[in-house]
Image 1 (tube, protein in one colour):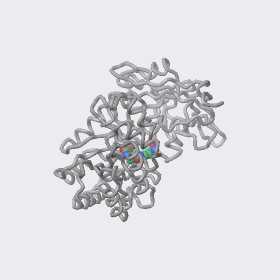
Image 2 (cartoon, rainbow, N blue to C red):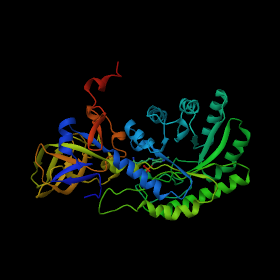
Image 3 (cartoon, rainbow, N blue to C red):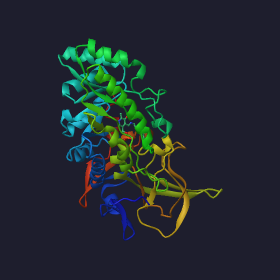
Image 4 (tube, helix red, strand yellow):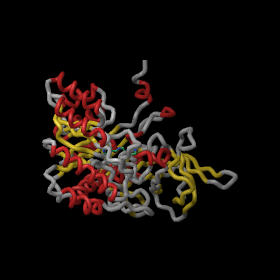
Length: 416
Ligand code: LLP
């Protein structure tokens, strides 16, 4: 079982912050995301404590879980936001985050998105190409503004993680190549509506070894030297997100303190404010996906299937990255069984667990798919005509609805 203060068994029933999850499912139905507010806040605080020695600004990467209530819970603790699109910017502003606490990433921002960001007054736009810098200059010039810009460098460090979530490698689309830096610095001199205020990188996600950060940070520090020697006044030094969490108790994540031990000595006294963009670290283990067992069946080769009412449309990570998520029975059982836990979607990749030893729960009972707080609801879809589930947030022993379950009418509301 994952070690979490926020989801644990009491008298044989899985609870969130002490609240019984069978009762929550009864009240709100399934499938259902149940978010622990205290878990979000405590992860944010743990992150802040680890890097307390540095002058820094933590911007939660909203893409991990962009529910307005999640953003609000973190903003209330002083956390900023990293957004990746106009839609995420809209969400952060709607949640009440001040624009000067929002930074905007994105390898392909449209001119409309750039205009929206500049008109909103975001703290930084993180640019990823020479062409994008020209576009930002054009839009800012048209609006009579000077854009505050960070350049995202591709440090060409290949962090060991799933290949779909490594981003700091020259094979990938992200960031500006070091060979282009001369041209980029030149642009900041020649284009009137750009101000270079920050350097940025993001090398990937769920990275276990701090040495990848060390290597990439060293490259970014070299760029800082070059920028300063050319007279640029760099205020922000953004080393991105990617800090790991434990999904599988057999593979515990490197504690955040190990990253801080390596990075703090490199970054202190550099005369810049460090920006961090954790997403998964804050959100992943804050949430379980509650699902009911519809049917059980066993085939002639003795394979046992638990067919549940949630599927890859609610959590695509096992299908997309072969990722492990713990599956627990909400009512604890003495007996366990080896089974596949699968959803109702017409794809063989629609599973949460394969050949996994799990509690032998019965049809009609509830399972909880753990670590469903990051890249779960936000990557959900209506494939197979599925309705997006409701989301509730538990705080201080009470569950509140923070997203309504979708209806059939909503499924077709934009169609003519
Ligand atoms: N900053 C930037 C620029 C990013 O692209 C990302 C994630 C983050 C920060 C936050 O990374 P985190 O701290 O959450 O690792 N869907 C995949 C993960 C994709 C991550 C995309 N970028 C998954 O489910 O594993």
